[in-house]
Image (tube, rainbow, N blue to C red; front, side):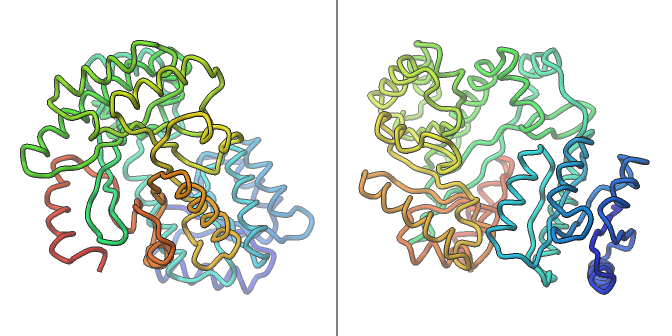
Length: 394
């Protein structure tokens, strides 16, 4: 992996290059200015798989640099580093993501070895699993994949924080391409939504998840199964009947199913989605408002729609134990949900510090890489057995 380091302080460049070398990454180039870095990237856009840049630099600062990377449509990974306060760093991270850059982390100076190692592992995993990351998938390709049964589900456990019991799993779709290997949903969900394929995709994912839930039931594993749905699924009035019929055919009680709706895509057209979501609740299907805190009309949606679960976005969970601002937002969301009688799931639990923070708050359920990464259905029973044997995260 080729890495480009950018910082106006030569000593910092040497220190970070040494950290990378100690972690086994020797192919590192350094730049003391953002303009020089842009020139190198422009000369060979595919040369660097990871860029690590400081924010506070003379002539062209990190925000300007990120803006230019966005204009260049840089497809490698980006890590932001700064000695500024955490809120400035977090805002810069959100800005870089808004420029559609592949932001892998935002690290406080001085950079700690463990934090850097975690970021680098994420880069390695992306390179290993995502074939041709820059190539857009076409609607025809995706249509053929759905019809040919090339979509597969991976599953990520949800764990009750108080007892460490496994209470459910979230279904995460992947595309097993016959030549390119595993393709992640950020490469094809938008294609599905833009080309009228999301309904067929969702129904395929839901049907597979319900069949898998029946297999787990037969094996003695009683898990609530969550499936993500799109706003486009909430445009067809017969959708609740399809869901109920699919559950019946699979032999799964509707009460074991959770449908997760992403908050930022909810309620553009009020009447039909409200009709559908209310009917789903009448059929005993649980409704979860996903990525809470990232959209624009959260409180209105909580008022208008009969959600019984709230998932707090990982951006307000990871690091909240060390960040008073994040902790305040998390605890306010948790308190509001509790007063509304809702179950609360914390997403993005990345380390022990996140878990310990949640344990003090009274949050119900945790989900994230610290607990378990998404995995194949066949691997889940073994993981569950190991988790129970050690009595939780250890």
